[in-house]
Length: 194
Image: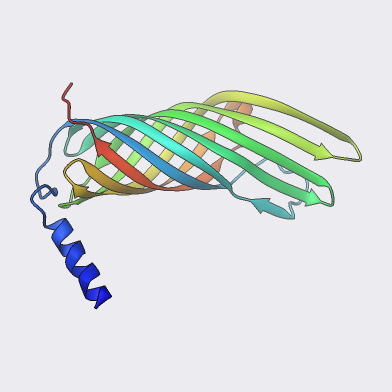
């Protein structure tokens, strides 16, 4: 009985008067997401024994110009990629990344799949711990690119569930700190027009 009620509630929610149908309205939006990221670092001179993923948060402010196009500013913080090279030897990396993204959509009713590409900057803070040799930290910043895909699923006209994945690519001083990220969150379309 509980399953039936859940199904009926879901159908009612997605068929409510305020839910998005085929229509579209331009305007600004905010998105907040959680993230999990897996390193694709290219700096390892020694075999890694364990590489732990990083958790983080992600936020965007964007503007949907047309059914098929949006522009957004995206910021992300990832807390501690940890890599262990053996007993007592480890590297920890925290990453901040900000990009300006162009997004292309293919709207299908309430589901809006997208592809995006962005350019911006990446900042990596590193802590090394090799007890027999040294123990120190450093930080580096340089240009970065982001390639992503995902989907917005509109529950109401102004509220969407968002799932996405990206490959973030550092350049110059941060060219070794590439990573793969998966995200999930909520997006709210602001009730204003610019």
